[in-house]
Image (cartoon, helix red, strand yellow):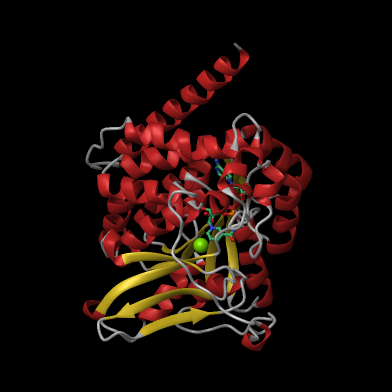
Length: 390
Ligand code: NAD
Ligand code: MG
């Protein structure tokens, strides 16, 4: 029986993880859950999976949860301490890190330090704190399994091969909902258009990241840290059918890929059960249904967030954390209809260009960089709003 903590259980990845858990009740038990926002769903999950401990972001939500559950309530905590307590609970063996954004960093690091194996969906933790994160994983001697479908595909395509035989990684990208929309029409994009991903159903933030292609930029940085390869050996191919989830090219010219239907339960289950594969009730991939599987190079002019992520990685140190923070703020502002779709990339570019990267010595440096990036992006957004009023 593998004992799990699920951080971000009410999100898209959290819900899919609990579907896998529910299909294998003899294999997995849920020790802790954390969720924010959707309390009704959290209550339902608590009743169904009977965790020992739960954490929410706000104290008021913790109170509401206790009132709703009454005498049957598990231990309910709140805030970052509560999230970290759930991540490092003594009974937990593996933590599914599925909070969205840099908010996942502290609890995920708490889990690593407490010796928990990690199934990592929360790519922003690796983007913001890559070197510190990987050092902590190695110091604690814990196993780290990627949940992101591209990184799971690479992880699977690396099995049975030697690291020194790898020439490069090829991450595939769907291209998002605006692959065929002309960029001079991007100013008219509304949040609902951007949230409508053609192949995957995901949380709001990652859906916008997919539309700008920042998601692929974050994934290049994630791959750099997970697989210890420099940026010039991590390529991106746009593959609109989302069937080939990513590939590894070897020095002899062989390319090994992992294919499947676009459903996150496959990489989640693999991370939970490695090296075994769990039978899942999903429609099989029927390649004969596809007229063609196509690949082409990404257009960095149309989607400037992708080259911006390569720039941040080249700058190193605090730069990816600053870029990530600016992106989180800009995505929220776009969703709130305070800025336009092209403004997202413009704001990140201004913030990143104005940043002088510092080495990442401690987690506090990451948090300071995150704060700096957020402030710079918010100031720019406020300034634009003020100018628009004049
Ligand atoms: P989501 O928005 O659907 O869910 C996010 C979860 O985090 C929710 O439970 C929410 O309550 C919680 N949360 C949000 N802000 C929080 C905060 N400040 N403190 C604590 N908890 C907070 O997001 P998602 O789509 O499930 O994505 C989660 C992570 O997984 C992201 O990092 C995303 O990039 C990554 N990921 C998602 C997918 C996907 O298909 N959804 C695929 C690959 C990677
Ligand atoms: Mg992905």
